[in-house]
Image: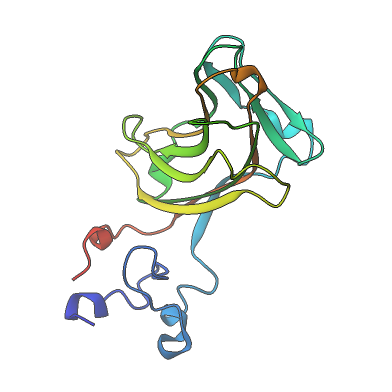
Length: 203
């Protein structure tokens, strides 16, 4: 542990390994209490248990793409926009939220059906509206049963205070997009309550 890293113990941020240093253990008393409970401000959570959970989600880009509630998977369902190839999105924007925390944690769980060849399903997040981070992705062969799926978490450093946080489920179809489906089973967004940004590089 470097001298600088030692100052991170008990500083209000849970160092659990996602950004390099891992003090979430008995030896360090769970980062001297920072990891119990995890300091955070909940921005959004959707488990899509009902159609009402689709509020705020919108279809982006490809004409004919649709979103709906899938009762079988308890998920948001994104269907491609027709018999041609293309990319379809289901988009959700958390407006003016980045000021709540320098670090934003996003977790998502996805499933897919009907993927063929180079078709793909993924979940992405942007905290500056320009660059995108892929949290989870699925390709042909990873969508053949109800047990197939992907889940991931990313911790990102937000842009300028007041920037939007944009979430999107993306379906990339090489052909017959109408028969391709992506499912978003859940998404969780939290702003980590810390003003420290020096974890971008771990010494």
